[in-house]
Amino acid sequence: MKKTGTLCVHPLTTGNFEGAVTSAILPSAAYNYIDAAELKYPGFYSTYNQQRLGQIMAELEQGQWGMMYSSGMAAISTAILTFAQHNDHIIFSRDLYGGTWKFAEEELPKRGITCSYADNNVKSFESLLQKNTKIIYIETPANPLLNIVPLQEVAALAKAHGLITIVDNTFASPINQLPLQLGIDISVHSGTKYLGGHNDLPFGALISNNKDHKEQIHRTAKMYGGSLTPYECYMAERSLKTLALRVHKQNDNALLLAQHLSGHAAIGRVYYPGLPSHPDHALAAKQMKGFGGMLSFELDVAPDKLLVFLKALSLIKPALSLGGVESLICQPAVTSHRGLTAEDRQRLGISDSLLRLSAGIEDAEDLIGDIEAAITKAL
Image 1 (cartoon, rainbow, N blue to C red):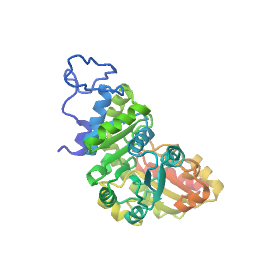
Image 2: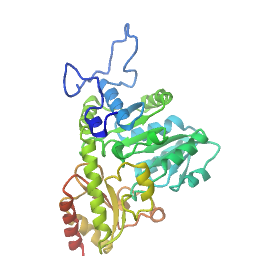
Image 3: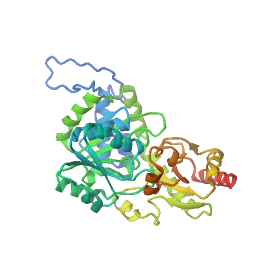
Image 4: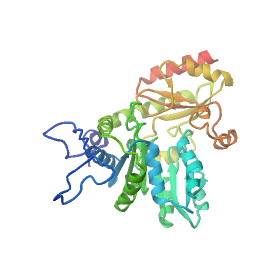
């Protein structure tokens, strides 16, 4: 099998036209069905580029098939609504992306679907099982404290009870983690983040190892839309060619930043699974190939000085995304997790002084210098 870096550049052995090095953009959503032995692009206006990008994602995640969407939430909601219906129950890991949490809290109840939230251990998931439980949904590494859920153990628990497992693999990317190889049924991504990698291309991805799930998920996708255009598929494929290079550099930068900040007098606590001080460090080392480009830290300054710090940054941009080549930072309490009550944030360990940093591909020395200068100004 090809190594990961090679696979990013050469994911498929067929599909290019007339000897072209890059793939073509074929926008047709209509195909001649007369005398066709097989409808290659059925329903859902599945274009050549959608099909091709799904195959590429399946190769990268070592799955059997993949499907592309217009956003990460389109992929997440399609996966959940395919396998859960009225009177069903879902167990979510407690640490979730804000959009997923709002979907669970606001949209699922409208459909008569109930939810529970497990701590990051298999016993917690097991304790929440009900007769009507249908799905276990996990986010790992989780937003924003980078908590890790034991994928193999949870997958084994789910299989013993006939449940579907879904993992949000956005923070890790296929470079750092392969959930399907650990027994998980479905892996989803906000492709807007690491897969696209340039903070300019919203899309989502869903990959599975189960052929029987494909038609079920496809039917749901047709009902709810969320299709990705051929040009966007082409741009996503183009971005994936540098995925391994980008993520390896982001891994390195995040570790250097975490190590520097963990010994800083103005920093309270640093959350990064690559640090031995992280409570899930051993588990992350076991189930991940790299510790990722995301870290969080608590800045020990007066509350009114947090904004001074953020505005003083010159290279690292305060922005609401992650995974791109540019380093980005945000304050979860007023951005990604602002929908939670102060009590809920406190229960999850998300303090008002917590900052989430997405390491880009800049020189780590420059990023450290940028943070130091901003801390000096804030103090």
